[in-house]
Figure 1 (tube, rainbow over the protein chains, first blue to last red):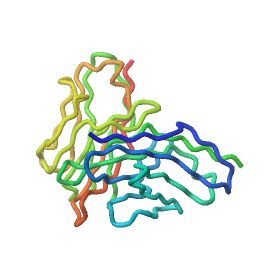
Figure 2 (cartoon, helix red, strand yellow):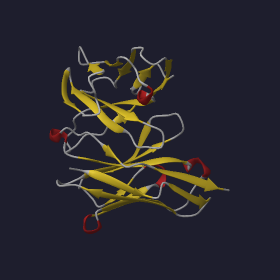
Figure 3 (cartoon, each protein chain N blue to C red):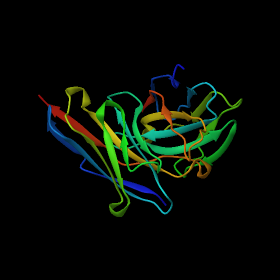
Figure 4 (cartoon, chains in turn cyan, red):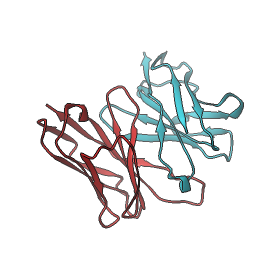
Length: 115
Length: 116
């Protein structure tokens, strides 16, 4: 079985500060990990994904995440927060395509950015 | 590539009524997924299709829920005898097999259902 835990349902940072959103996973098979962002009343947009090619994954809008197998973590970071980063962020895990590929999501972390 | 579209965007209905949602995936994407998202929660998997075949259904998908993808293109999700607990955002996603080990799902804007 697979699961995802996002630590902190709400994170607040100042504009220009480091963003760190935490995600820990549990998986009995090699995991594939994703970060999605959701703006109010919209669908989910993919930020980045880990598919075992490289442990440090770079995504859109200067976001990146590092896969740490020993810590079962896939934390999302951004060096400098912008006001436009305020949104809900979801970490998700899936199996391989042949296993169905369905995504198991965490409960989400709401990011607020203060001016 | 116009993205995944869903219709309607909002639906308000009375308890006991039937509702149907439509999802149009990205052209030529062979997989289509349905998820449900309640307030303050992450999306939960409901079901998925590969072409027209429904390959997996979650236990969340009670017998009041039915999904179809008749020609392997668009999909419909019907809820019969709606209950207040069905109030949620219903998200559709589509994907296409690539050379990698897993696919990337692209999400539509969702249909927000309110059951009064």
